[in-house]
Image (cartoon, rainbow, N blue to C red):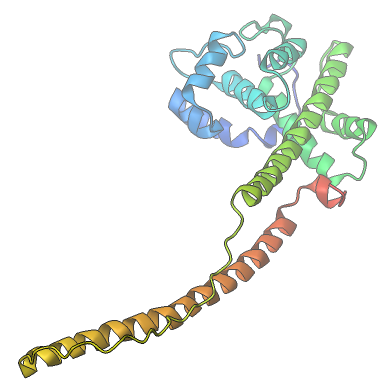
Length: 275
């Protein structure tokens, strides 16, 4: 497999897959739980992909470079492209999983090409198909294979992958915006209730009660005084504090949201403000 699609030193192999390669060199292969930690996927999902033949079977319960690279590629495309179509796309590039006879490139290198092409496309002003293909030609310039058709297939596959990744990001942004609108429609922010003073109701004079001991009367007066004072404090100061805290929290949250929105906009939104 080392001879397939060789890339000269300093090429894209130094990019996206580099950290995982360090882990593979140290461990000799990752367990399923470690692959889940790296990719963020559930173990059952990865096992299902293996069962369907989209990912090669692990070797002695160890997932090696070819397994993890294909898992990463499928994961990057699955929100925009049907899983069955991703499998066909990978067959178009390298044949069926586990059959290296038709492979034209290491899948870790293909993943690195995708990462580098996305980075350079984000820095480019031309996001048309021809502009993306120009970026891809620059990224794969060090790729070598005796079959001239190999480079064409890799360029086509990478062009599709880049637009799929961009569409995935746009879809996530749309879903997040739509979710916020639905929350506002279903649960509008409640307005603080105005403070209503407790009405003073004049009672008709009651018959004078029988005299009670002086100590008992003092306790009753003190208790009534404490409760009344507590009610007055709650009605005025506590409600005002809640309103003030609510207003200040809303203003701070709005300012923070605006700052986050400006700094988190992806390249295609910053260059196309209408998005």
